[in-house]
Every structure is written in C-alpha cells, then in structure tokens.
Length: 314
Image (tube, rainbow, N blue to C red; front, side):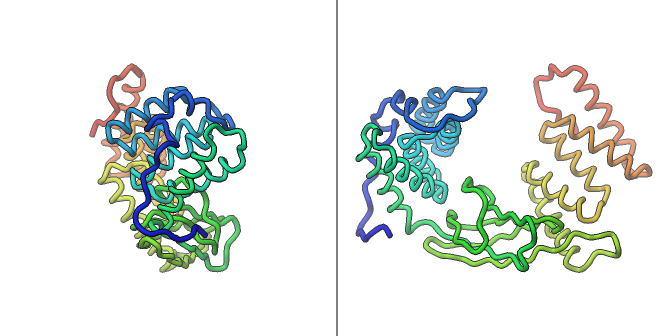
C-alpha cells in the first residue's frame, strides 16, 4: 500500500510551526470549527505547544495540539500533532492523524504549501507503518449494544472483526454491552503484529439466584484492577472498576470505596453522595462513626468553598 523503501526516512522538514512555519499560519489553517476551549484560544494553545516542544516535553505538546485541533483541525496542524504524538510514543494516534492529514491535504486544493504538507504527512505515515500493531476483537454471540475501545488511545470505537491500529506493547481492551458485565482484557502486541482477541461477555446477574463462577471471576478481576489503580492514585480508573463491581453484586462496600476515590480525586460533592448511600445501605457498618466524621469534614470544607487545596483528609 505504501511502496517500498530502505533505510530510515528523514525527519519532517516543513509541515509544522515547530520548524519554521509561523504560528499564525497554523492558527489560520483551514478546518471545521468546534467549541472554543474556555482556558485558551486555538492560537494560544499552538504557541503553548511550540514552547512544550522546544522544552522537549512532547507528551504535553501533543496534548496542547490535540486541544487546538479539537477547536479546528487542518492539515498543517494535523501534521504537527501527528509528529508530536510520534515523539511522545503515541504511535497509533500519530499514524491515524498522519492518515487524516494526508486525506485533508489531498482534498484541499487551495491549501498553502499543499505539496509539501501532503508529502510530509505521507512520509510520516510510511515511517510509522512498520512500527504499529493491530488488534482484531471478536465477541462471542455479539450481544446488543456491544462497544469496544482501547484504553489510552483516541482512535474511537473498535469495529468487531476489523483490524484496529494500536501502539505496540500491553494493550488493554474494554468491552461492554447491554445486560453484560463490562470486561477489560490485556494483550501484548509487537510492532507489525496483528493479534486476535476473542472475548465472552458474562451476563449481568438477574437476581434469580447466586452469582455464577464466571460472574465471581469478573468481580475478582475488577477488584484487583481497582485496588491497583487506587494504590497508584489513578482514582478515575478505580471509580470505573468499583462501579462495575457494584452493578454486578450490589455490595455496599463498593459505595464506600467509590466515596473514598471521589474524595481523593477532589470531588467532594460526589464523595458525600456515596458516603451517604453507603450508610443508607449499611446502617450498621462497623466504620459508621468514621464515615460520619468524613461527611462532617466534607460539609465544612464545602461551606467555605474558598479552599486553596484539595480535600484529602484521611
């Protein structure tokens, strides 16, 4: 599809503001306008991205360019974004944005410097082709409303049975469907490799009997991930896991765990909500006094909302 080549390809020379194109050119780059970000304008985000690039913080630069692209994407900015993603190790997102950049440059006959931008986008796509991997996901019996996504990537939903571009390494696949327990599974993918992953989504309990062995296994797996995420301070991921467990078996302890994770992620309103639900569901809880103290502390903090630090009291 890309033709043959030998040896390393040269670095991109011109498609980006980082190496000579004025920021104004990127700021005025064509594209479909989106909702403006409250914190910064598109030109400001591009300037911040240039500064982060010069400082060698490619992950931050890629994030800033992504925010600018969400306001309005065009081929020049798309090429810039893809290059920063490559530097940051986000190879799959870089590859997909390079493809989109090439398509947009091909279609925009009035694009300034079009031949050069098109060539640079195509060169980047070519360079990345042997460095990415693919995952093919199959779900047994294909339940209604099935949704598959890859954690940590921006490429959108995975289509069942169709190769999906991933950055090589340990890939976490998230699968969910109506009436099924959400399932996460990790698979190692090497550069140039296509890995097929077959997933069986366990039905949610219907309340008619005890949990099945498969349902118990899912609870154990989700709890292990929740504990790991909580210990690492990844409270958003822990919240997702605790919520899934609660949806499976309704254990009130998960309400307490949710409250803790929300509190530590500085979301006091949500923390209060779940502390109270926990006490409602477990009125004789052994830690009731401690939970009531946490509720009082949160209420006091919310009363003088001019706090200067997150609510992280133990």
